[in-house]
Image (cartoon, rainbow, N blue to C red; front, side, top):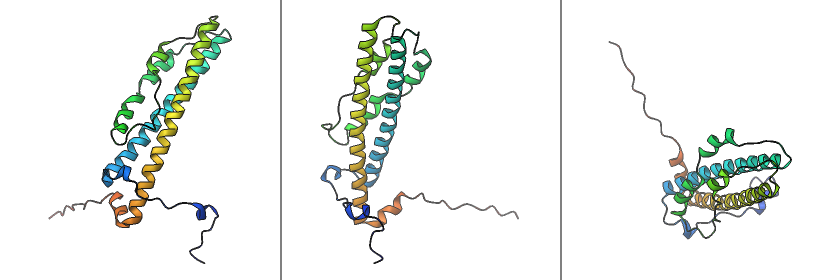
Length: 178
């Protein structure tokens, strides 16, 4: 009875199995790949929030209020979505990764008070960009889940591999005063 799961959810989980997609990666390579995926997901989530804020600015302009993105321009330029993307695509092929919008060009467009057609087009393009970023983020989550499953499968095969993830302690040298 001790081996019985305490919840029903435990009974329906599948045990991760090794995938040939990751056979070319060492354990350290797999961990690095997962770390790169996580970092890229953080960048994409950040850009999505920025695009959503920009869309809010455009909607404010649609109702006749002056709104600019000057205070967000520097923040927006801090992280580039495409830099991490190139690193990820060298590990696995990109069939499951959707295209990214041209965020720099989109960001350069300003909402204009009273320019309904311009603002509607910008709002449409921002909404489309947000959807593309969401699809890209979903693909990243899928890859992260696959890489995590691979890591778990390797640990199940060789539990001692888990120990290599732990930090090693260096011996502390003691100074003895004479």
